[in-house]
Image (cartoon, rainbow over all chains, first blue to last red; front, side, top):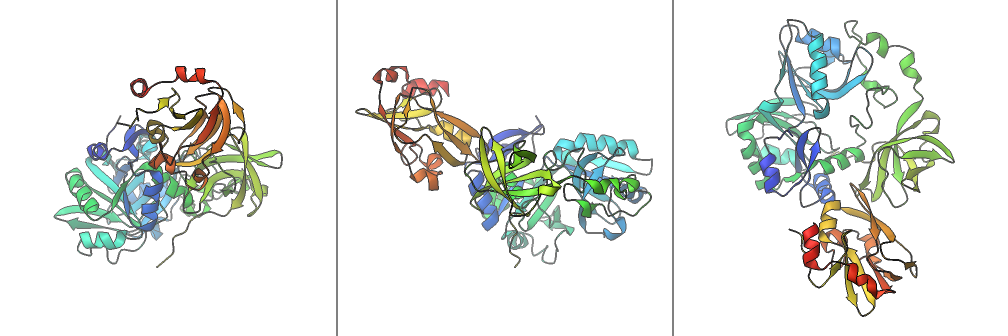
Length: 358
Length: 125
């Protein structure tokens, strides 16, 4: 199994380790998923996300290549900005969801660990001589530092280096002579940053964060937080055959470029005719819906659960599911079949949780 | 290393039993609680229900997993820990005291011989 640069730290902290897409990763530390999630909601926590794929697209043809493979409006992506988007292949299959970052003369893509090899293979098959694709995943470490106190703490660690950094913006800064990429992005519904750095800086940043009371949190709490925040996870809400409109991601299909390989597809009438849609489910009974559980309205099956967890922020179990569009009516009660029991749930608009803006 | 009090008996399904006269107090071991992670729901059989040894008597659910609970001794349910409904975390924080789950009146004391003592239980985890 692959190990991140923080592997020894996780073991030192007695983390419970699991296989995540071929990486030996911490699902939780002894504090446990719920306390870790609460820390991120109330103060600050950090996650080792070094398993995520980090790929640079460079060369003279980089801009044209990005315009060809992603559904973004490339002119609206300014240098120093990031954008969430989808990688869709020539068969209209969604290979991944990712964040693209634009530097002055190249691009960085952060992709899912589980899809890194397939994404790279596909991109390689589409590139020409003027495009260079560098997988820098193993040469760098990456942390997501999340929570309402994070910006203040990170500014104090970096001599106010991110004082003016807006949401979905990024910059390169320096901490103790180490060059660090900092983006004001995240996957928890909280404010915070995601940072990328050279392997040599890994021990130092771990120490700086823990000395400033930023708590290491595992992938279990990260999943709980992203479900509360109504954020998609590839393999759950997004699959190869998903229609981007069904899963609520129509806004990502912004390209008007005839150079984009799926230009016809994203502007076709067919894509608009989806029959299912994504919904939040607030469970009013005791029990947690799990992926694959069937959702019923009266006695008919109307869909399936894609993710479920227990939210301590809401003090309810919650789930995300895909259901037939006609039944996606906020405040309607549905039933979810969990093992042999039926749990009542209320159709709820996503996200379940939205942070208060200061 | 999980704590295993030597005054208790254990089942292979990771329940502990504390016997006082003919009353058995039952919970899950620290090893089981740690494996499950944060527990959020505990649903058990109703009062006065009569159960045979190793019958399912409920379910315990954590953020990540669900597990069946099996009664280590035959008995009639005489008390359920009501505190766990509002504070399921007692099972994670203090599984042998505040995190007890159910009390039964033992109906077949022969069942006790099939349970493990602390050193036998330690060997299977």
